[in-house]
Image (cartoon, rainbow, N blue to C red; front, side, top):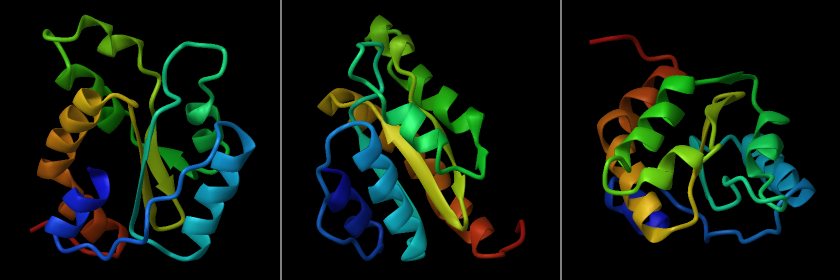
Length: 133
């Protein structure tokens, strides 16, 4: 779903990578940042279960957070999905790469992509050195 959404918006997309939570997420994110991709969107591992560790893995790679984006993604699920507030997903920048954690559910992904639809191109342009229009 995410890869198709990005392709539909003109982004070149590598095949999706599926890795276990924890250190493999750190390695995959670092590889993407090293490859200088514009955006990485993860899905899953953002809840409160003991095995959900994607936010911690992401924070280990980020140079800085973009908390408003993560908050907007959580809010997008309300009021239809009250448990959306339990997502611990983060968003931020590593190098010149925007990294965004989305929940693992298809509904959560859909909500998150809805938020990104309004801001992704502008964020990528800013990270490439663009200025406000």
